[in-house]
Image (cartoon, rainbow over all chains, first blue to last red; front, side, top):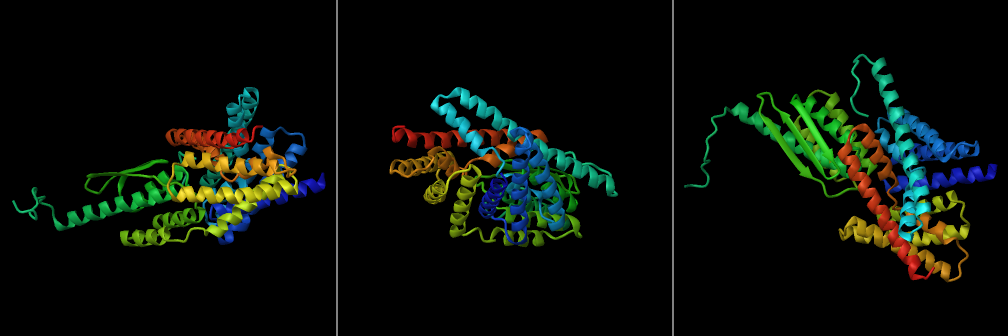
Length: 154
Length: 271
């Protein structure tokens, strides 16, 4: 179990490194971005082992990655998206949407339905996690700062 | 009638025409800024917010920006109240987070500092436009890393990893070649997924003890629209309904293309 967990972390780091290169993340932002991917996937696997559902684990990981991205974006003065995109990529239901369409094209509609609902669920909770964290961070910074105007948008 | 005599003679003062000139320049620069941001994979709300902030920093009234993945539209008024509107169509779409960071930095500098000149804006934009993109060898290395990572995440064997890495490199070559030939993106995904399926199924039928379904997904993970589907939901929740819907449709079509492409390879081998 322990060994498998380490392998999963390393795998997430490899995938994160690959995606960071593909998305052209440079220099001092590279390592934090990859660490974000490891962190998110670690939380996800940990939550799954703790008995959470896929959806619940995805939500927990999404919240943690969003927090990580917001903090790092303040530290490095770079947009949070850079860390968010790389961090969340191992979690993102790309394989799920592929499997859904695979089920539809091969006529296995029960499988497609199951995978499709799971895919939508994961995508929804990932988006919700990001939304909640970014809104709370903005609220916090605008309440602390002098100018008390909240942005309309997230 | 002589061509060099204007048909209508605007009786404007020098100063007013200079102001109109700089407003036109700013409109053009902001459009370029917006299209560049959109082309490197920024969120719609970031594009719209950045443009509006920059225009405000330059002292223009009622700035408004609208962006969807295929268009940027900007409108504002100058001090005299004349309205300026223009739009630009976007055809390229990619991901370049380095350029995104640079553009974001430029927007910060323009908004924070004292009112900058349009020349500064133009020079900085030019600089960002020529920053080097990733080299092809780096893309291949990244492809190998992604396939290896996902094979391990799906708990595949080392043989699976080897097969998926080799196939992924071949698939990436096909993908990039078609991309350079400016082939339709959906078609490109279809063909690339077919190549991926063909490679894995071929290796399986050659007698390699791999798990073909697992290895195929590990290869396909290089080009799945996972980020697209998450972003589309994020933008829809955030109120950017049009671009959210655009992205959902695109993600679904790409996923269908991937499934059909990889599926045809399986059918070809008679499984």
